[in-house]
Image (cartoon, rainbow, N blue to C red):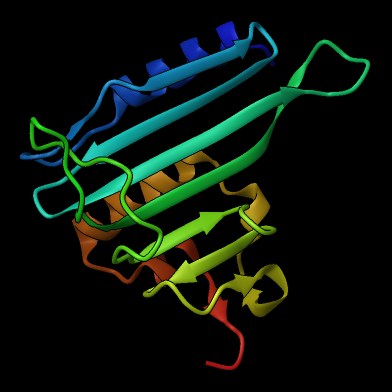
Length: 161
């Protein structure tokens, strides 16, 4: 996939989301490093008291003219940092969270709190690497709509709990 196809697909998918009243999607923030093969994107979905923050980085496969997702962070939690207009912005790493899946220091998940970091082998029922941005957003929307816990919506269990 290249940047132009990815951007068109993502923006089309975001426009189709059915958000609850009082929430909105901020304009995606695109950082195009080496078009059409390397880029970053950040998307924030604001709710009255919480937000989703999606950040993904794409880079090309060696010797090929296609790109892949190489780093990402999907965050859902209480909004603790705002810009001048009152919109959610990336906060501190220890801001409150309900769920975060990220690749900083290796692929892992935070559930309910910053620590511990749950690595893939500690999680049953969910392949962390297969969760995409839209999957994450849809899961949070379903959680908010139904009141079901996020682990139930995504179908995972932390081993030993």
